[in-house]
Length: 478
Image (cartoon, rainbow, N blue to C red; front, side, top):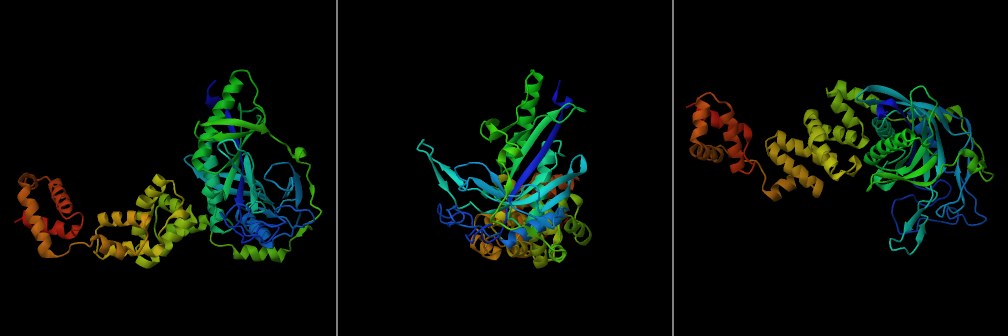
C-alpha cells in the first residue's frame, strides 16, 4: 500500500514564552541571554523554604491568548505540580495546570492550497519553563543554566485535527501571528520563544486512531515540515512490514533528516499531578475578563479585511503582510510616511520577503525601521534615485541600516536628471548601436528597451529612466 492509503493525524502542543518583564513565580528578569545563572534567585533555583507567588501579568496574557483564539475562559482555575525528573528542572516537578486550565475549547481558522479549515484548540494553560543544559562537545559532562527556569509559558494544545505537514505549518504560523498581534510573546523561534511538540500518527481510513509518537521542542517551520513527512513515512513502513508503532518521544535530527527515540512517551498518570499546595486558586471575575476583551488589539483577520478595502491590496498580498505583526506594522507606518501603499506593498512582498527567505530571518529581525523604508519610497517617487538604485539601497539597509539619503550621498547614487548629461549618454549609446536603431525603425519596439538598458548600464543605474525613454524616442523619431 502507498502513503495515499493512510490518513495522517497531527496534533500540536505549542509553547510560547510570555513577554512579561519578570518570571512566573519570582521577580527575576526574563531577558534572553545573559551569563549562565545570573537571572536567578532562591525561588527559581528551588532552594528549601522558598515560596512561589503567581505573576498576575501571566494570567492576563494567557486570558488574552484564550480570547484571541475563541476559547472559553475558566472563572475557576488552579496550578498543579507535574512530577518528573530532569537535571535542568531544579524542583524535580514543574508547576503547570492539569484538570482546570485557564482556557478551553477554542479554534482558529487556517488557509492552505486546499482552502480554509478550522483547527480546534483543546486548552491553553500556564506553566513555568525549565532550565537549559549546556553540553561539553568533548565529553566532559553537562552544565546547568537556570536563567530560563521559571520563565512563564502558555501551552496551546490542539485537537488532532491536522492531516498534513502543510496544515500543521499553517496552524503554527497562525498561532504565531495571533500571539504577536496581541503582544503576549515575541515568538522569536530562533531564541526558543515559540516551539512545538509535534504528535503524529497514521491509520487506514475508518480505523481507530493509530499509536502516536511525539517530536519534542521543535522551533523551525522547515524542520517541523521535514520531521512530519519523515515520521509519516517511517510509521507507514513499520506497519507495512508487519511491525507496531511504539508510543515514544522522539528527537528530530536536522542533519541526518531522521527521528531518534529519546524515551517512552509518558501519560498523565506518569506525572502524578496534584494541586500545588503553595499557590491559591485562580478566581476570575466577569469584569476582569471583559476588560481584557476590550483591550484586545486588531487581529490578523480584521486587519487583512481592512487592507483589502482601504489599500486595495490583493488577497494574496494582504495574507502575506498581515501574517506577521512586524511586517504589517512596517507596511502601515512606512505608508503613512510616503503615502504610497502600492510601492510599500511591492517592496515587502518582493525584495524584502526574498531577502528574509534567503537569510532565514524572521520579520522581527528586519534591521531597518518604517521611517527608513518610507524615505526610500519617497526618494524613488520624487526622482532622486531610480528603482534599480532603490534595490541597492535596500541591500544596504539590511547590511548597515541608516538614513537612505545618507546612503545615496555616500555611494554617489543620486539619479542623473540633468537634460544635457542624459542627452550626451543617449547620443553615445545610439552611436554605438546602429543595428538597434535599424531594428526600431523596422518596427521592433524591443530595441528601445535594449537602448535604455545600455544607457542605464553606462550610468551605473543613475540615469532617470523616464527622461531616457523620452530622449531616445525623440532621437529615434527624428
